[in-house]
Amino acid sequence: MRPRSGDAPPRGTSLPTAELLLLPALVLLVVGALTPTAALFPHQGDVLLYFQKADALAGGALPYRDFAFEYPPLALVAMVVPYLAGWPFGTPTFETYRWLFLAWESLLATALVVTVGRLAGILSPGSGDTARRDAANGAATRLVVLTIVAAPSLAWRFDLFPALLTAMAVLAALEGRAAVAGGAIGLGILAKLYPAILIPALAVPWLMARDARRTIRFAAGVGAALTVVIVPIVALVGDAAWNPLTYQTARGLQLESVGGGIVLLDALWQGTEAPLTFDFGAVHVAGAAARAVLAALPWLAVSGFGLLIALSAYRARSEPRTGRRIDGGTIVTIAAASIVLLLTLNKVLSVQYVVWLLPFAALLPRGQFLLIALIAVLSVGIHPLNYERLIAQEAPLVLLLNVRNALLVALLAWLVATIARRNVARPAGLEPTTFRSAT
Image (tube, rainbow, N blue to C red; front, top):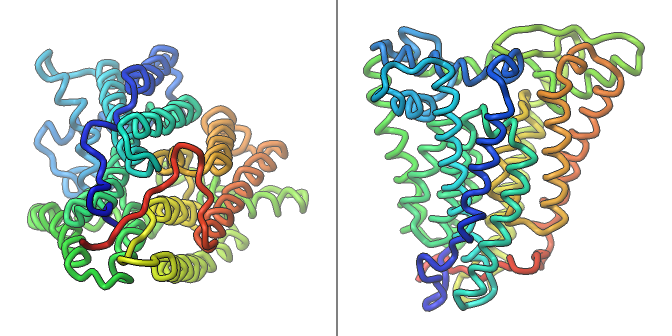
């Protein structure tokens, strides 16, 4: 997954224009200005949780041992950085913290635009600086559109942090920096767990090309990142370090998930209401139908990811013609398909999970990008705008949820079909170049 000799884009030639770099940050700050603190509750109150965790850590308490913490350890970085930024002016209040958190998210959004611009420049068919800048500006424009659409989720959740790490991992992989790619994925796992599903997307092309050197470096990068963080955490808090895994395992079928939507639709069809539980800081569907879905999901997930990995391996072997090359656009499509498959088969599907798709949505063909934008619009329409109505299981919201989820399944099928096709459809200005797995 490395550009051919002489094809690597010069650094600094694929930065989007200044206004495109700043627009996502401006959008988030405008959202903050238009959202009074009281309006964050009850459905946008995650930022208060972040403030409380950062305040506890600043007071000398340890996560997992001294205070409950359902996220992996590096999630604290996204929560503590804004808190520390307020320290020169005294211990920040929550009102101060929410603005500092918005500023932090704005910086992450700008960094994501830069990273996606670099990716678009690499995937550009042109060899000159102008072609790469045009590709970067096109991808950045798409990212701005998605930022506007998903602003309520971006502004008050920390998911931009792991999304940026996954984008950096793909960028490093396409540049042939396997150890850096592995390290970024490892850090992403330590921030939100889900980047683990991108390991096959990045490793399979090297494996199929028998590029042992880069495969080993990639694995070493992942292992080193995990070890450096997890070992000290385990030494400090013991077995409590594994609480994020047990927490996720213990959760039920979340209301907005694909499975949850099916249970709600079935209850609506029968003229009843599905039983709900309010735990783990979320709303879950209960009852016999929910238990049946939960029992089926692990088998569906194993089968689904197994098939996707097999298809990716087939594509990695059949696509190259000479020099063990692999198309960079294929890697982006496989990464996007991996995330959509997780969203489809996961028992939890919170609105902020759409943020995970942002870096790759900006690089996909126009039709797939527009479909993701529509999914994001519908997601925000469900949460936070009409979440109380969904909890009340009003028919329009139950139908809207299932339409959103059906579109997510349709997107998955489209991405899988794209991977399976011999020639990937490529959007104008973002056509991928060809990459070698080894020099």
